[in-house]
Amino acid sequence: MVLRLDRIAIEEEAEAAGGDPQRMAEAILNQVTLDSRPIAIREIASALDILEIREEPLVSLEGALIITPGKGSGAVLLNTNSAPQRRKFTLAHELCHFLHPWHRPTSSRGFDCSSGDMREQGNSTKHAIQEAQANRFAIELLAPRRLIGSYLRDLPDFEAVRFMHARFDISKAAAARRYAELHDEDLTVVFSRHGVIDYAVKPPSPPNSTLWRGRTLPVQIEQRPGQASPWIDADPTDWNLSPGRSVRIQTLQQNGGYAMTLVHAQSGR
Image (cartoon, rainbow, N blue to C red; front, top):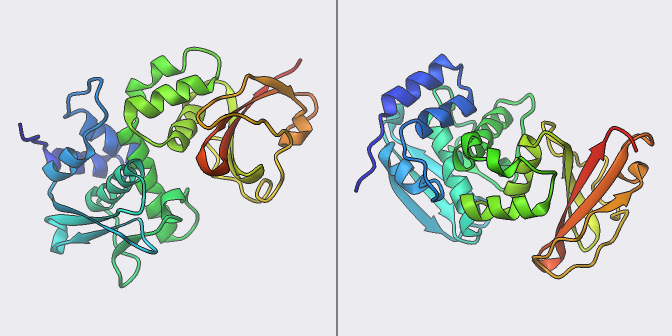
């Protein structure tokens, strides 16, 4: 069965919302059936006039959007060197550029989006703002707020992140960031490789590289890939927190030496 969506209604909602990416994503979700399956992003894109989705090995790009005059229709190019879940996110990202009433190419190359653009959280430049909005739209569409409540009821734990990863077919990193963003507890996600920190995300703040990048993890937890450690108490000063906080951490080991650490800060001991 071919999916049919009312693109005009979605774009009218986008304009009424001032281009808010969350409202744009919700306008799409209001028109689709939400069940236990991951969001059908390819079917959604096709129903909204993305006429071709092509995949090729790319060197410096994650994706690109080609549009006709007036954004009557579009085509998306995705990088086959990236994991399938990354390609899904990239497709949703490009769909935002296509639907957003005020997104325009910021270079002569058009909408060419790099891996850095996929991490962009926004700053003062038009390009960065557009990329941040596209990232926000993508996660709001692929991991809808209205479906996440059941994963947030208990105390923080990577087990819930793994369930979200499987349920929404998004990367574990995206699931961890979404989990930390929407959970009521004070969570930071620290991303590392071979025991050295790359960056940390403390929602709703953007990724913080200045305080974290290049530092050795204060606590090295050895686990098999795919396995989460038990929670352990930690020194708050090791994690850029005031000494009066009570802090516990849990690490999920991944392949290639990559790891994610959940830092759960509480008011006191």
